[in-house]
Image 1 (spheres, rainbow, N blue to C red):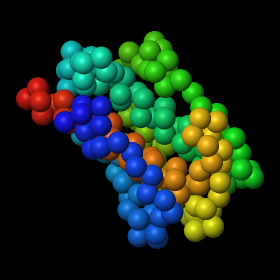
Image 2 (image 1 turned 180 degrees about the vertical axis):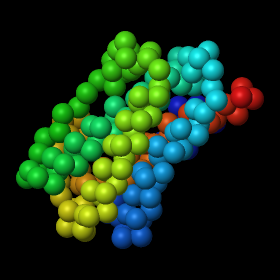
Image 3 (image 1 turned 135 degrees about the horizontal axis):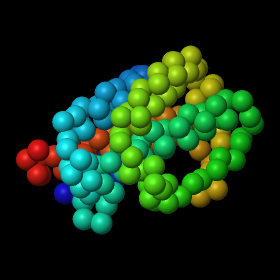
Image 4 (image 1 turned 90 degrees about the horizontal axis):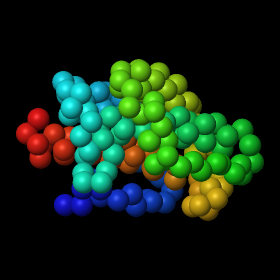
Length: 172
């Protein structure tokens, strides 16, 4: 198994059907609770353990998820309010090495709860025409909000699986 991709790499599914869209939104809605469950009961030493050799620590992964999902939420808002906006990439590895990524994880878990509550409410108000709206990513090119929804429905479980697969391997 490739420890970088415990649920497999992201594969863009193309335009989503209403059922697949609803499933993706449900997955995003479940992510905060799943992340909390994945880190529940871990010691400080366990939080500071890399999920794979050369990878981020569990603590860094836990801080990364709300960092990334904040960017996703903003990208959705830009996509809904501007015509084909160019979204700004960011250096995720550099963010994961900032001092706040060594802080306690509780504030990031709380942030994820509130963020997902707002994001999911927004997603549930969107129609097919909204999800078809386009944006431009300087590194990835043109994408729709459907594409972005599918990516983040994968992203949360991807990082939760980093933690749960480490726990399983280590017998935690």
